[in-house]
Image (cartoon, rainbow over all chains, first blue to last red; front, side):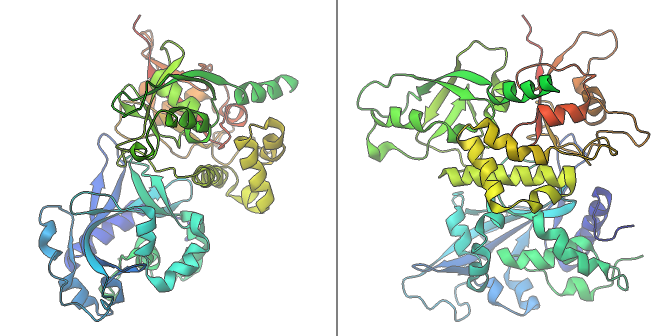
Length: 226
Length: 275
């Protein structure tokens, strides 16, 4: 079996395991099915505060290192009901908020992991809304990418994040382009000594680029069977 | 083979007579006349409507103008689908010219992708070609091309230059004779029964036993509802570029000749008109 290629069945299996782990860790991932179809996708909703400076905006969460702290502070859920929980949880935050003219904004981020038949890889789709329901533009989305990553990503702008149609929902989402995925996943998965969850490993690489952290606990938990 | 080359030309030069009308809720300084245009089937709405925009801006105040978008009978039109696909899917079997409503306000950003410039169309177009080649040749052909070759594909489409485009696209349509076709056929099926934008799966042009797959075989596998059941009346039309190809047509041939410039075979399933 070619380990670096992910077929649909394997994708579903990896997702199933990820959801199980996520439930134990209360990390908020769930599986959504598409009406009248056997297909679906992984979904997670996060509400978090981002700071918009005059020219700068990044999220506080990604600058933190402690994942347990992260767990407590970040309000993660698959239901959209108690969205306001995080709204005022960020006031006395870390020392990053030093711009006098900056203001913080509460955004609801929605992340989807969808299987791509064409590339045989998972693809990360995401969108963000203000609590009034206004969608965030591509420009603002770029500002929310961590400054240390932004420059290197933007050099290759069109091949990294772009606005695309969600292949299952037909709505506009930001997408991290998958055409390099197989390349960077190959060495990881050729390590046959430790069985790894492809989707989890992949997510831990691409997630942090767009403010989606994968707690270390996923890897310190028991590994997947077989 | 000479005949087959003519097919490529016919597909490329397909046009749809269209009448653009300004949405009546837009504020204008004087009455806006409709604007008529022959739209290339293989192009994209936002790429060929500069004249439409200019025409309507003449009667509007600059303050009232936001991003332009199009609608047909209440449905916002997705610019990132080829024009011919939009017409076949939403408006086939209607009277020509195709009547499109133009909007400059209330951009439906939960339905449509923003298209601030033609570079966005270019990025979309190239990403489709890339994806199609990932299916056909594991991306090897497109990755072996140089940047100027990619540009040639795009410029060919943008400037409606058939020869310029096909001089390069030819390479993307090559396949080894021993395999009898592409690795997988890049296709998308548009339909109204399942709530999703299109169906896209992996499907090979030839079966493991060496049988050539036809359009009918593809539908039987991924969307059987489109096919008439034995002895029953036909409920759906299977439309590519405004025509109904025979279901026996080999899929590989269709992929090489009836694909859009984005290298996908776009197949529309629409109800048979009742009259």
